[in-house]
Image 1 (cartoon, one colour):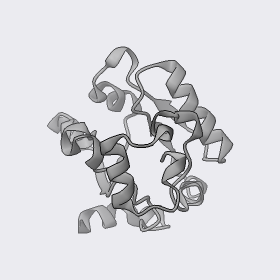
Image 2 (image 1 turned 90 degrees about the vertical axis):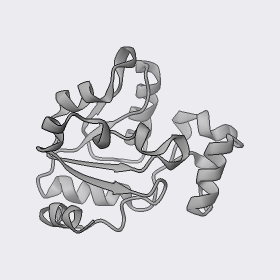
Image 3 (image 1 turned 30 degrees about the horizontal axis):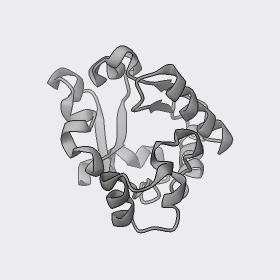
Image 4 (image 1 turned 60 degrees about the vertical axis):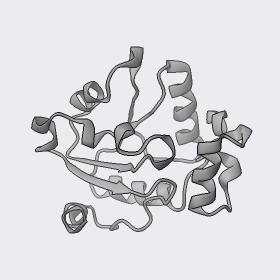
Amino acid sequence: MHRNALGLSRMQIVRQVIENTDESISDFASYIPIGRAVKKLTSWQNQGAEISYLSSHLTIENMKKDEMVLKKYNFPNGTIFYRQNEEDWNLQIEKAKPDLIIEDDCESIGGKYQMTFPNLKPEFQSNITSIVTKEFAGIDHLPDDIDKLKDFAAEL
């Protein structure tokens, strides 16, 4: 999330983004992790998960800012997929071939229309488990055990 969201409630952060009231929203190089995301992802990777990241950015320059933030905060290594040449997300998912997608509900930028999984073709959806979190709520509430993630998704 943008650095000036630290300490704000989820709804205050969503409002900041919708109203575009903070300069740090577009300062991608200054973004910070939400909650214990680094610890959670590292734990999953240590259990055998292959971590990949989907960036919303359309240019390699901005994707590199994401990469820098991931390195700065010691996120697990993983491929960063971004929409080169304004490609559709479907092409990125076809390249990544994930078993599981964890994404937020994109509340501040248009909701379901901006999400990845709901916009995939049915043949791709059938091979992927989807977990949707509230935007800016983080992933701390997700199971620590990667074997329980698919069960967690089924309960949603």
